[in-house]
Amino acid sequence: MRVEFSNDGIVIDAALVGPLFDLEPAEVHELMRNGEITSLCEAGIDEHEGEFRLSFFFRGRRVRLQVAASGEVLRRSTIDYGDNPLPNAMHRPGG
Image (cartoon, rainbow, N blue to C red; front, side):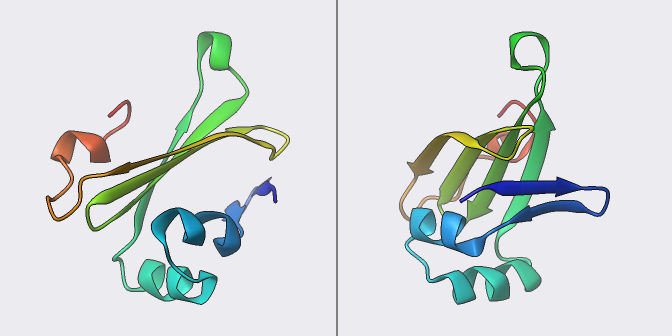
């Protein structure tokens, strides 16, 4: 699965993000529409020029994808804080 970049924005298959949150793809769409899953996109600089870091937040979990400009997912990571709310710093660039 790849990420698509266009003039209209970034398109990510929910099947890529859903399992990282233990969700079905259809649930991802609904939760994003309702603002329960939020996201942040950061463009790489220096040695990461041409890459993007896409972060998604839901309940006590942050999912991060590092993506090449071609749309190839280079790395994935998940941090799960359990029942604790995510620290506010995690919702900002570089967090």
